[in-house]
Image (cartoon, rainbow, N blue to C red):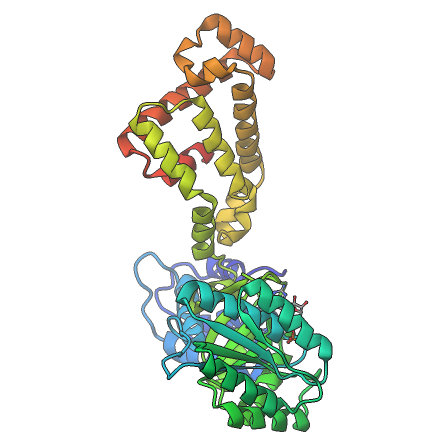
Length: 444
Ligand code: GDP
């Protein structure tokens, strides 16, 4: 991946220290960099042009606040404008109709329609407690019907059978009828895609739309399509009243510029992002966060969530109980260390950090931190079960034995015991809460 916009701008910014406002002359170079970054992120050219013009209008003459320099101020404006263009806030699904709410899935073949249909089913079942039925109107590829059956099963939703001999509209109508009679909340209609836009396909999906009156018509777009995403989006927009976009494969190499293009061309909000092949790899699209990704500013929100996910709540509760009863020992201490490893290892979290921070943290420091964690585990392993339960027993001769067993100096055993005591003290104060803070301190 090429250097990020932030990197590029900070280089330029160095040459314009001391300038207090964004002016026609200093903005030109910076906007050229923004333009390059957007093109590299696969935003379509006409969309980039429009975007740059808007940023320029907003930026020109703007006073640069406090400690910011014009470059940093411009990145701020670009970030805000990106997020605004991709849709402020979070666009939810509209299910507020008489059930069943019909959701029509449109898109090219391979975009991820079938996968997304199942992911959406799972999300609606788990997060919104809906009863969900899926059906495939893809009469050209019997394998696609079977694929939907399989993934629907994985999602825990129900699947309505269809065959290639039927007409797509008949399939959809029959499924809708079934959904009504069996009190489903949502019917997801997966449709046939083609490798490229063609008129017959558009006519077919228009007919499907007319047959089932979907409350949501979602266009599934492959983010890796980059520039081509614009043409796809345009064609579907002309054929259908789109209510939302799902951008798939954002876990791949794509910088996600397609989000900007597709949103601009269709005017429809991006509602979800596909972030893995797995059935739970669908996220509600967050424009603010995505703008950061396009700009190469890292993904802080994702990082925070990742860290939270890594902390096993049940074990945190057990720990809290132990602390209350005064039973927090070295076994628990070791569990805490392995918790930290479970969060993907220290360096695994790095690529989610904003570039500048990640670079600073990378290399020697991280290696050392990971090595420390492993050594601490080694030392605890060298203790007897009794010593782990009653660390106060560990006096000089035991320390020497443990150090020898773990292949470290006695001082390191002392250091670990000190850290343990500190942690124990802190845990008593926190009563099991604030676990994260503590682990951060250990890792840092
Ligand atoms: P359809 O032809 O539009 O129904 O596309 P499929 O649902 O069959 O998906 C095509 C391929 O893309 C499959 O291999 C999926 O596993 C993969 N895919 C779909 N969504 C995602 C995603 O968000 N991330 C990744 N990595 N792969 C995805």
